[in-house]
Amino acid sequence: MALLLPGLVSAQGKYGATPDDSTLCVQSLSLYKEFVKQKSYTDAIGPWRQAMRVCPASSKNMYIDGVRIRRYFLDREKDPATKALLVDSLLMVYDQRIEAFDQRGYVQGRKAIEMLRYVPDRSEEILALLESSISERGSKSEAGALAAYYQDLYNLNQEGKVSKERMVEDYVMVMGHIEANLASASSSEDGEDEGGNLYEKARDNVNELFFRVADCEDISGLADKLLAERPDDMELKTRLLKALNVKECTDAAVYQQLAEAVHRADPSSESAYSLGLFLAKKGELSGSLRYMKEAVDLCPDCSDRVKYLLKAGQVASATGAHTQSRSFANQVLQVDPKNGEALMLIGNAIAASASGCSEPEVWGPNWLAYDQYQRAKSLDPSVAEKASERMNACAARFPEQSKAFFHQLSEGQSYQVTCGGWNETTTVRVRK
Image 1 (tube, rainbow, N blue to C red):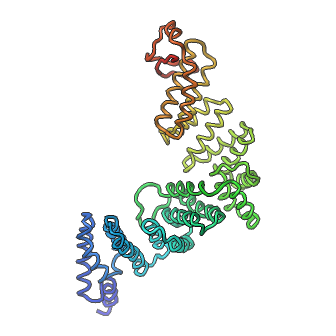
Image 2 (tube, one colour):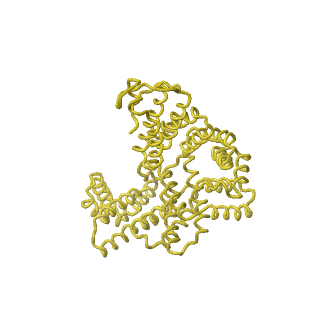
Image 3 (cartoon, helix red, strand yellow):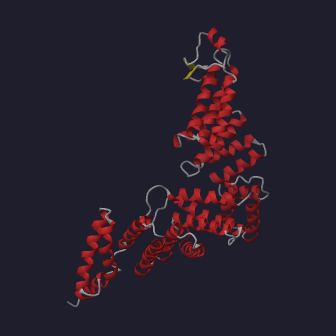
């Protein structure tokens, strides 16, 4: 009995203060979980409340489920006063979880995300929670907490309560944590995230807000300030270079210094890409292409591979290396089949191949390029205007109907393109 007593006391403490409490706790837990499994949250809330009252330290999942239950009622409530009370009840679940299981930084991040969703006007309170959470967890911070932190900063900036300088400086910090997680493919420690790579979404959301606020002058000014304070901090230099690249601030005075320092210390896809961008802006395309190819080679499966492949393809196209450009574009399409920029590059490569052909073969590449531009326009609205311009340019080189007829070709007829080394089928078109 002496040996069994400590375990019995511990069990009673976890599942309730008395044996009767323990019985009630186990029953309530079992009952509410069954209802949650059936998504019958109206039936679940009674036994869930009972379990929370009798044995708050019995199960961490009780708090995770409690959030789902509270959200169910909150999202269906129309009355503003009742909705405000339900928000407080939801947030209380997080406070009770901290009291029962600690994990303060992690749970504060989760609570702040809920507040940003339901009570975004409480911006300063949200920011305090997220500052505490990210300060404690650093690169272990969840994607949602990092994105929420920058969203809340942006909201406060729009209210005139946070400076643009802080927006730029904290961008460097937030993106450092996001990139660290993208590199290690981290996930939620409690498995509470729901599908997809949330760090990629966080990166895109943070970048979108950053674009609205910062310009190249802001970033280069911050870079000068931070580099003066921490001249030997290579991690800082890498993050600043990333921020400059996001806005393509290759004309900034500090850009070349950063790109060369980072690449010299530890050649990476990012630093190679940076030097490639810098040389492209200076018009040194052969040197730029060399670095762009290096960026692709150093990034076999990194999150920015599509970006590097596209830029390499664009630089190759500008140098007249159309076969190489098309190769980069095809690699993009293997990852992103609807990428309009890649389809445009393939169209450009096909159109360029017509120069060494004579009639009627010379028309084939124009028809085939037209197909690519048309596909790009239909799949990717972001290139629609540019694709239309290229389609019009191709159409201006279509043969007149009489010329096509002379070569026994008619509009709508299937045509095998062989000029330029192609072996693909397209459709005959005539000039209107």
